[in-house]
Image 1 (cartoon, protein in one colour):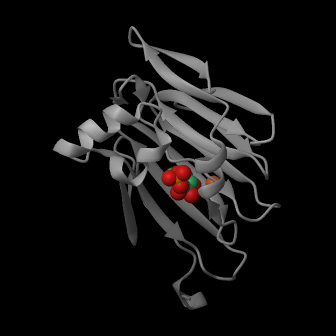
Image 2: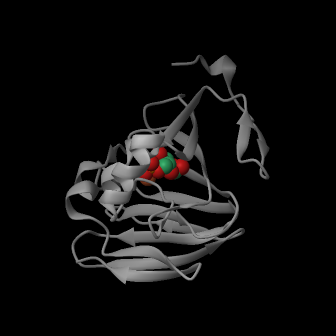
Length: 189
Ligand SMILES: O=P(O)(O)OC[C@H]1O[C@H](O)[C@H](O)[C@@H](O)[C@@H]1O
Ligand SMILES: [Fe+2]
């Protein structure tokens, strides 16, 4: 925990690149880190035999004045597909049931998928400038459907927690697949 003398903190954000300074933690997510999330498992295995592409990166800054302070995460999703499924985040639900989040799309285009994993689903068309409030209890995933980088900012409480297992088990109701280069929402079976 930092002492109060270290606060307030300002970060220098580069919206083009989706990077900021100072940045204490960068987490790369390669295909191997989210391989079970993609539908085309034979293509996943084939790609992984040759290399392990970087799908996205998370830059994280925890503000630690108290245990209920907030955290900032900037995610850069690269353009691409695995089979015909666009690159996307792993997706998670918050461990705590009372924890929302605010997402702000800074660059690029795609979808924010929101799913209660209990029958309610929304696909929010996303482009630079859209800010979306994610209510508590909704799993969230971002899909990059463009030819360029997608950058978004997430702001959430430190105590929210990330539950990835429930997403791996239940899956989102729809996938975003490329058909002739255009995104299509396809219901999961
Ligand atoms: O955690 P993932 O599903 O990989 O999503 C990537 C990241 O997206 C946002 O930036 C959230 O604020 C982060 O908490 C999250 O880690
Ligand atoms: Fe979250």
